[in-house]
Amino acid sequence: MRLDELTRPDFPILQRIVNGRPLVYFDSGASSQKPRAVLEAMNRYYERSHANVHRSIHTLGEEATELYELARDAVQRFIGAPSREEVVFTRGTTDGLGLIAETIGRTLGRGDEIVVTELEHHSNLIPWQLVAKDRGALLKAVPILADGTLDLTALDRLLTARTRVVAFAHVSNVLGTITPVTEIVRRARAVNALTVVDGAQAAPHLRLDVSALECDFYVFSAHKMLGPTGIGVLYGRRAVLDSLEPGRGGSEMIKEVWIDHAQWNDLPWRFEPGTPPIAEAVGLTAAIEYLEKLGLERVTEHERALTRQTHEGLARIPGVTVYGPPPEVERGAVVSFAVAGLHPHDVAALLDAEGIAVRAGHHCAMPLMRRLGVVGTSRATFSVFNSPDEVGLLLTTVAGLRSAL
Amino acid sequence: MSGTTPSASGLYSDVIRDRWRRPRHRGELPGANAVAEDVNPLCGDRVRMMLAVAPEGRITEARFVGDSCAICTASADVVADLIAGRSRGEAAALDVGEVLAVLQAEIRPTRMRCVTLPLSVLAKALDGSAKR
Ligand SMILES: Cc1ncc(COP(=O)(O)O)c(C=O)c1O
Image (cartoon, rainbow over all chains, first blue to last red; front, side, top):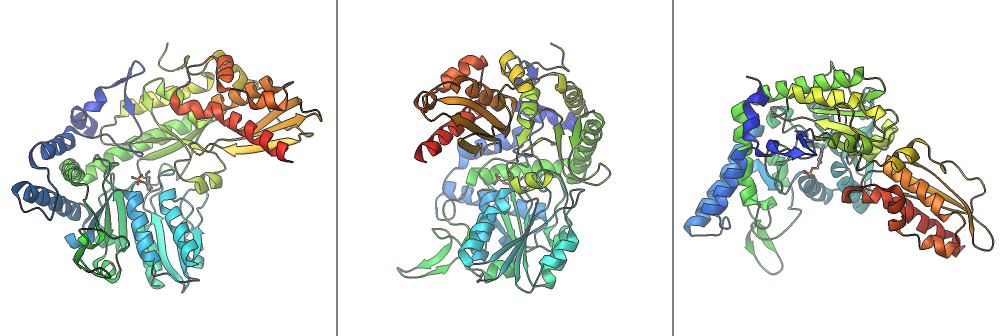
């Protein structure tokens, strides 16, 4: 059985009729839909076990704490982290990247250097701009080559003895490019720079093993991987987390407090001030269990087939340009394209009239848009529930678009 | 309607299609003395409005250039149409309702910024030239 045949009944939202047609959802890269198991787990939690975590002595508080901490174990397993103390819950990728940028930022001095890439989402660029400005540090970007991959030769030139951080996406949310994480980490290590990987577009689609990637930090959101909004993960290598002062303060992250100082809590709570997203953690556990039951290899294979079908099909349509690495190169579940004579927003609106949801615009990657010489692209992204028939519908609809406006 | 040729008739009225394909006022305006440009942060669309304002304050011609969707382009074209011959004050008073009335389309809230971007650029152009 194909994966979509197996999973479609689990996604209640796929029953939606949009503009008179069955919903075809190709926007999981922005936020995926949720299987019933996730919705039910969160509901069950709220209906049976909700209380605040950690400081509650009563039964519900203990249940909530246990469920919250079980989510940490699930994430540890899911990403291959050596220990649960290295899994910090955040509100999402943007929050995690902001947290780590602020935290590392405090250790930077004037003239220190931060390296990002030209294909970053604004979430992995702006926090570093803020830090660079605040600390008098220098921000540099690795350019991309014509085929949408990173220019690693340029990376070698950009890395210096002053490089303190290299922050980059694992999978581009526009081009689908899979960056060579271990290779970049190796080169960053050679100059003693920390590595921060934005895994927002990788976690939903690829089997992760942060130990093998050897990066210092790995960040992603639950809502793009079948889980709820409002929670994300910051994995941090223990030795590095231990060496950092907490970037943000509040309850939960302390052991003992005096008016003028405090003693920090142990990892991972040291980096989790305030009441965490508890129900969301429960939902994330359910999402991880759902993906693991399907098997990440199978998920990758299914989405890769859809991505390839879309890429090759679109490329055959006269007047359609597909961005990013060629079809034979492995990429994430993302295909960005342009239709000659049509603005990306009009492409998205015309597809929406047929019930097909794609994203259009700059995808929060304006420097990359500038590099591509466009204001925006239309973008189809895939998940476990998408089918080859849906891709077929996308292709015939796009083929008819040029006469539509 | 066939599944392969979407018409999206509600959103893209005949006026919008026509002005997207054949805008009347698209292009540079060399003698412009009131110029402004702005970007829609949601989509990155960019519109520049150029006005030729006569000494007594009447707009003799308006043109626009930009990187914009059909709705935004049609809106800019209609704005340029509507303000030609108006005084500075009359142009500044141009209301989105007047533009929508010409466009005759069902603009959803998510696309309203596409209609209003040319209007805010117009306001900026008039503002900038008034201060000079
Ligand atoms: C590569 C990448 N980084 C960061 C983000 C930001 O994620 P979030 O909005 O969940 O914080 C996204 C998603 O929009 C993304 O695709």
